[in-house]
Length: 350
Ligand SMILES: [Zn+2]
Image 1 (cartoon, rainbow, N blue to C red):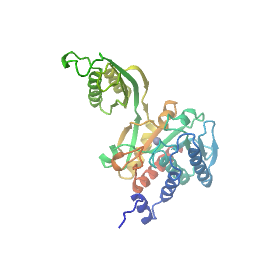
Image 2 (cartoon, rainbow, N blue to C red):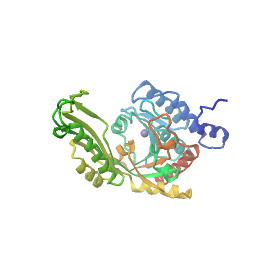
Image 3 (cartoon, rainbow, N blue to C red):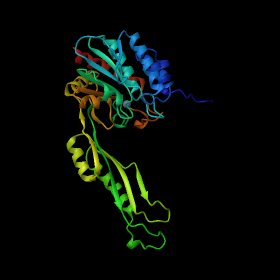
Image 4 (spheres, rainbow, N blue to C red):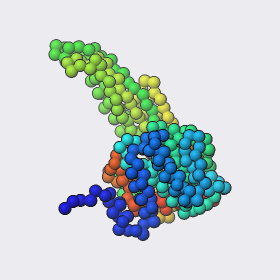
């Protein structure tokens, strides 16, 4: 007997044809069939072409701006956009970005109100080139996105309203020691740069653990001279540290004392949009769980540019894994998310 390799949500969709979002699942499959879609690659182009066809089918006015972003609009009224991105990291899952575009199209089609638009931003994964280059500025932007973490799963909640996109500080630390013979230098006289760097790695972990919502990661380490029988004389390491608001990011940065730090401020989400999303979550009889986003998103770029922005997270299954083919949200959660997004856009556009 062989086990089916089809994802469980697909089996669920087949057996439960009444699910209104079954078209979303079919379109997720069509986009996944294009494979990895690095920003501005032929594969991302193909995804945009598919989406443009769906936008036209839905009766939207379609345009492509100078940065290559795809926008489908219903002209008139207060411009309230939803959407996300269709580019991927190498070896991606099928929900990151894609779900926000497809759910956004469902919501806009359902409402059909003047002013609504669906946007597909280019090249989000490598630094949000599309949203940074987007010159049109809507009056509000709401992005639905898979959480890409375990918070909603742990809380046993299908949906969450994002409070802010975390700020981050990135930089490096250098540790100097004295290189020497690994066999003849006694332990008590060594100045081992890697031992000092290792202590810093633990210090960074404790520093982040001591600040609610903060994280810190050492992802790169260069050890010189790099011989198996030479005491390390110099170590340079990278630090990526994030926190949900400016004061917590200050405290984290102070604790890490990075060289040449590069800082990006947190992007608070619009209170009006948070309230609209909370009201729609509560209308489903669910408590409105709020959480910060540890990952960057196009909504953060728009918020920083002065566009009132908000985000709705959908629970990630499989432990919250993302940037991985095992990334998963259930059809039930997606259906709830489309309902909440539709309701919130309806409140904002009128
Ligand atoms: Zn994304």
